[in-house]
Image 1 (spheres, rainbow, N blue to C red):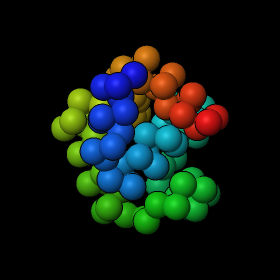
Image 2: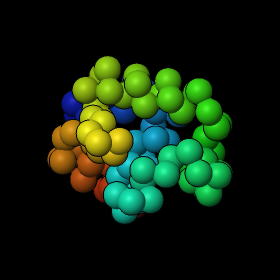
Image 3: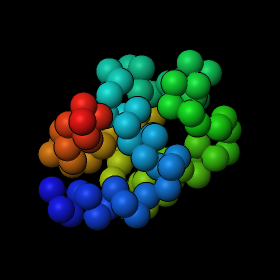
Image 4: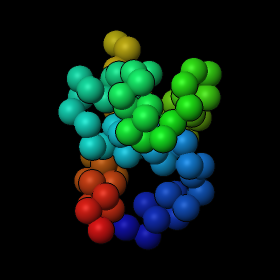
Length: 87
C-alpha cells in the first residue's frame, strides 16, 4: 500500500482523475474518456491534455492500451484506487 501511496502522491491532478475514472467506471464507459459526461464528472479538460495524460500513464506503466481500450495494469492498484474512493 505504501508503494501505491508514493505513486499516487507523485501524480498530477489529471493523472489521478483519469485513474479514478478507469477504476470506477465499467470498462465500456471508461473508454469514453473524451465524452463530455466523463470529462465533467472527473473535472478534466478536453482534448490533447487527456491524450498527454493517457500517454504519461502508459509511460509510467500504470495503464495499457490494447485494441483502443485503456486498462489499469496492476489489478491490486485498481482495487486500492477503488478503496481510496470510498474513504
